[in-house]
Image 1: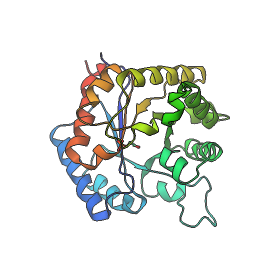
Image 2: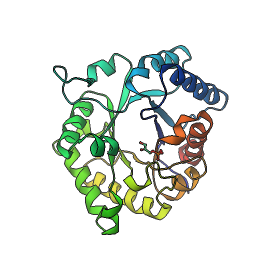
Image 3: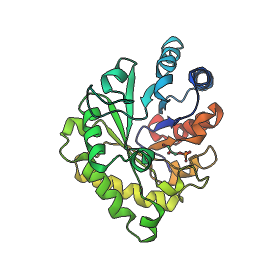
Length: 261
Ligand code: 13P
């Protein structure tokens, strides 16, 4: 099956790679993509905060067709928020994308639905692009509540956003049980959730928003998921830490894009 939406692949490096290692990986990705461009796919890398400046310099000096993302941002503009980083700080570093509400922030750092909503608003109203992460724990799926759960997370996060800001939002479905587990959700599970999320987005005047999948995506399973899972791309963790596997995922998406013909 071919895909008519321009795909997007986001590499979430999580808390990996110091700035020297980050520059190295950024350069490797740039070299491979220069030799074998993926002109129909948007590519974003999201390194740790402390690597952003170095990676931004590499992207600019090598003229890479890669956008820079951050893994998190504080919902406030400035002030007494020890350890946090604001949107204007990120903007100065040429960051265009921000992950909002990643499950590791929700689960390990108490990011509530309300804070996800506030943060999404901060990003989406600023002219930057947001990847809103949603997804259920295994227990929720076992109880058969995964569709309702994700719908609630999504609706809550976008509530009150104006139409222009909504167009800045990409949704990433990342079931918690698939993240870092080595076993992705099945193509059928991904297809079910993707069509559910897309139906909600259509009803919320967000038909143009892309829907990504994340959770143990690899170079081996990317083609079948993008072909039959109905997704518009991926949010990649572990496999984004090696240039070859990350770019292979980018190329899997690129090959499925029908608009190129
Ligand atoms: P893995 O690809 O390592 O499972 O991580 C997924 C993820 O959480 C990306 O944000």
